Length: 278
Image (cartoon, rainbow, N blue to C red):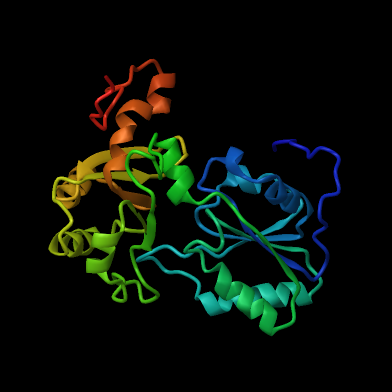
């Protein structure tokens, strides 16, 4: 067990009968916030997702662990049941930590769980976390914004509440208006997403990065293009969890792949955007 302790301060108290909805970050335990660590140290029970590792849960040795993971295509607890379980635990006088990968309010169903707590009069606190669509790309050496590339970024989910490709997205509007696209949970429906963007006018040679197991030792990064993305994902055998990033900012990885450089590699291109620096 890791004996990490918090420095003295007026840290908030996780009280009996209260639920904290907390983001665990994209995977690397070092990317937890101090508020998350504080919650882990106090909790009586931790209700956690599939993407929360034992290395993080081990910071709560006193707590009961309840698995409530939802993984696409696999048997999963129903969201309503998870939300009501939080209510029941709080009403039993437990200090409840609901620990979710990334940020609870970024494609994490945290809003739904918070609504249920409000409806049942259960006090709660929101603890944001680092979202994989930002932190995971940073670990891959890809800035989600770069002044020479984009002044906006659009975050999308790769599936809706039914598990199918999202049908409410205006792909033509997204294609024309989004300089950079970051797609969460997009592997399963990558063929649909790629086809929709190409049909809406997105260029086939646009750079794409697929980052799986972001920030973890098994992180894998595929650099490809929109036109070749689907075939290359299959060839590289990329599996969820993964983030898709579509845009010219992906080119910056050629200069900013800091993990490879830490292992001794040189940047592939000091100016991958091809700017005139004279």
